[in-house]
Length: 267
Image 1 (cartoon, rainbow, N blue to C red):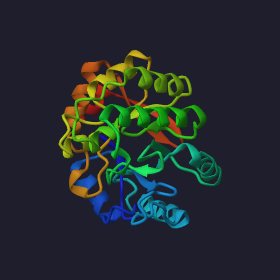
Image 2 (image 1 turned 180 degrees about the vertical axis):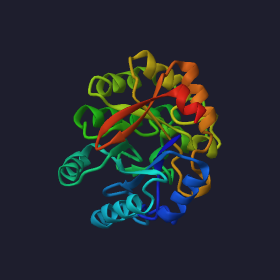
Image 3 (image 1 turned 90 degrees about the vertical axis):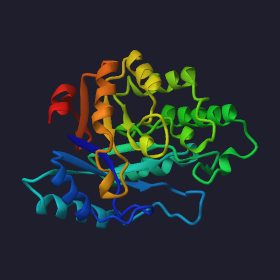
């Protein structure tokens, strides 16, 4: 089993050490994990600074890889929070740094964060969804330095009305941009923890991705504490199998490695 969306105390919203997470992952029998620490340049909520010392991060991951060699595979990842005007900064980041795996997420829209509710003020739910997806589409049209799109329908987590989320036409356009470019999406199981009906994206969007020819998919818990590692992965794998996905992807130095879903389910 692989968990490809994990945070440690390098992320501003997490206090859990890498050691604690790694020890728990070994206890659970996970084969490989990837730390994906937050970088959200110019995050709108000034109480949060989602940046960290990249040299120290690299040093720490290498130390953990050495310490736990033979017990578990540990990969170095990052989760970037894109907005259209920030893309040049992320281009520069990828020129200067190397990661095994890059999650491209959008946590802010119209230069307003989603988590506080500021973005939704004065908007209907439909309008908020439309603006969110249009801005994400703009990002993926002009930026390709990533491995997969993270929790593509994250916007629904922060709305009171969870039912209005069918924006398949623009989501299809997003998939038309990323699939030919060899980019994938994740199934992020944190949705179960936040009172949603399932993970992110929902089953209808996963099905749409498959129908558009998408094959690259990772699975991640978005854990910020070690107790939620691989949360609801059995359910997530059953869903992916039912939709017709044959493989789960992991990454090494930016290259996807494919593992049969059936084999992962038996692990």
